[in-house]
Length: 528
Image (cartoon, rainbow, N blue to C red):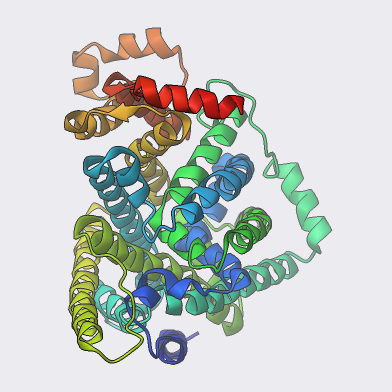
């Protein structure tokens, strides 16, 4: 199909988003931007979160991973389920009880300003790099298969897409994203299911036949019981659990939508509904990967894993319909992962770094209400400036990824998340599981040293480093083999990082001192 026709569908899709944004952002204020006035429908939030969680990386890289890793990714998904349960029944009650706008405010109330700033910093760092990596991957697909043929340079594509996202998020924020993400998740899931059906038909079989063919190839193997492998079942499940807790439960972008729901009960229903849908959708992505590889093997198609889906979907073997569906599906996966990231980063920077608090909207005309209204306008200007600044940062980061041109984006994202979310996991775990106080002076030291130690452990256990000259010259190869004996750190890196942070925090902590008279009061109260 003509790239110009495909590009017209991209523009049409964006115009639809603008229409939705126009109607949902009317009468919006800072509270609407940050937490949707705490009036979001839990069913819409649950469905829309699917698109945010999956993103274009899942849409392209998860099917591409089946050729080398079978269905091992589903082990991580099983870990996600456990993690989401912890979020629903441990973290969400905490957030609602404290009536938080930014979840990192908890760290300030528990440990002080340094912990608050550290938590916000690591979220901003991780989300900025992770979101721009996802953005790069999808823009690169659009560029290779559509825009290069139209003579549009990569830098222009990136700029236009970011301007599109700014146009429909800068005013309504979370209030708008709840609706646009729902629309986009629908587009992504419809595209996923239609693509599976079309490719199975192209194989001349039905779903049962295709699944049998995948079993014969070994693609459907879910569990890997090789203890030393990076995809060992226990490591993937445990790692998946803590990835879910950290990257969803301790992530302002995801929790910003959850706490925009009216009450805790609805938010928990949202979380568990999201868990069920997420599990099914991830399985379908693996099925898509299986049928893509069956089709590629049958037709002699060889390409990089991340390029497999677009190569087949946009090939001349299919009618233009599947190409259109693929383009709509992939941009449906692109926008939720980026619009939510920019919005949450804006919220986090305004609230956690700049100290902007949500303001009360004046209900009567008075000097005080005029003053509050002026303050609200000033905060709005600050928010819009921050929002625009993050868009510029995203633009620069995407160009950096283009220069690096790393095809293993999904591995990089999980690795980087394991390093940057570890301190968040350690801080929140220490706050929830202990009643000890921290020495403010050393919080940043612990939160920097722990990830560096975790990264060192990961490098020592990585076989791909064995051939590096520096690695060998320092004698690290023998040390690595002696310590790990072939064991490769996988997705449990985030747990290792969290534990190291927890230990470091314990070393700089002290027990809460309760005065004798308070102890007496507590003792007498307990006996009554």
